[in-house]
Length: 301
Image 1 (cartoon, helix red, strand yellow):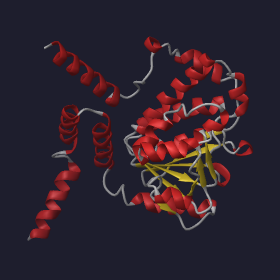
Image 2 (image 1 turned 135 degrees about the horizontal axis):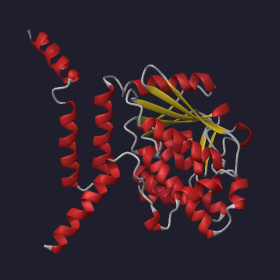
Image 3 (image 1 turned 90 degrees about the vertical axis):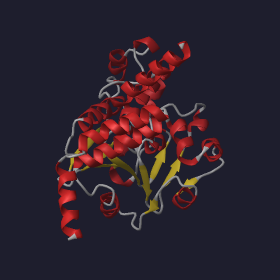
C-alpha cells in the first residue's frame, strides 16, 4: 500500500511539473535561488534574444550576438527565459524556428561570464537556471526546429537538442566541446542527446571521437535534413517551408498534439494515457473537429 501511494504521489508531481505553466525543475528545496542567479547574470551584458511572430503561426527566435559568434551573455540567458514565457502564452503559435544571427548558430556561453562565475556553486546555479529554461522551452506547445547555420558549439550544441527537430546547412557543424573545456554539458544536453541518438553514439559525440558535420549528423539521426542553401536568408526560407508540413491545421490541435507527445516522453504510461484523455477533451467537439466531420460527410456523399 505504501509503495502504491508513493508511486501515485510521484506520478502526480511529474504531471504537475510537466503541464503547469511556469513551474521549474529546481526550487529553493534544491538550493536554487532564482532571483540571486538573475542578479549575477545581469552583470554580463551583450547581445539579445529576438523573437518575431509570423501570421502563419511560426515564431523565429534569433540568438543575436554576432561579434561573439552568438555566444550567450548573462543578459541573453535572462532574455531567453523571458521569450520562453512569452511563447508559453502565445495561443496563436504553432511552430518555432531557432537560429543564430549572421549565419552562425551559437558558440555557447560567453567566456567573460564563464571566467567570472568560476566557483562550483556559480556553475551549478547557472546549470540549474539554464536547465529550467531549456526544459520549459522543450515543453512549449509549439513544434520547434533548430536551424543550424555555421557553428553550434558547447551550449549552442546543447540548445539544438532542446528543439523537436534539427536542420543543418551544408557547411555547418555541431560540436560538444565541453570536454576540451574540462567540464561536461550542463544545460541538459547530455540527457537529451542520449534520447536523440542513443547512449553509444552520444558517448562518441561527447568524447569528441565523432565530429558532427552535416553529412554525418544526418547519418546518425541527429538532424532531419541537410538544406540546399547555406545562404542566411534562403536557408531560413527553406526551414520555414520544411516546418509548415507539420503545422497545417488550427493552433489548438497542433498545441494539443505537442503536449501529448511531451507527456508520452516524460510521464509513466498510466499518467501519459490520462493526460492524452484530458487533452482530447480540449479538442473533441471543438470547431476544428466539427468542421472536419462536416467536410468528411460531404466527401462521402
